[in-house]
Amino acid sequence: MKTVLVSAVALIDADGRVLLSQRPPGKSMAGLWEFPGGKVEHGETPEAALIRELQEELGIDTAASCLAPLTFASHGYDDFHLLMPLFACRKWTGLPQAREGQTLRWARPERLRDYPMPPADIPLIPILRDWL
Image (cartoon, helix red, strand yellow):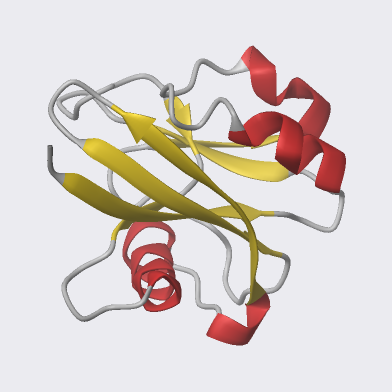
């Protein structure tokens, strides 16, 4: 089974809320909420992938020094195995904007379970909640 490396981030605002992104129609798992991020390309570090994805998807800039490794998910889907490091980020420039048809929402950590998420993201919720 193929392993797919995806890097994700918990963007945390000054009020302690976490940014969630809803997968748009036409994508796999459309309608589910997830932490922003994306696939790590060949020769790219997870941090570099996040910096690129945040610029492409949300129009914000951050630096590798602002990405704190928090935890990771390891989940087997039907046709691939997902390995997903989750970083925390409290410092970026710009205002997050939905650039790829997704819906964005800031959520309190204790309310993250109110959002339907892909199976790989669900185990990250208690770790993030306890950390915040």
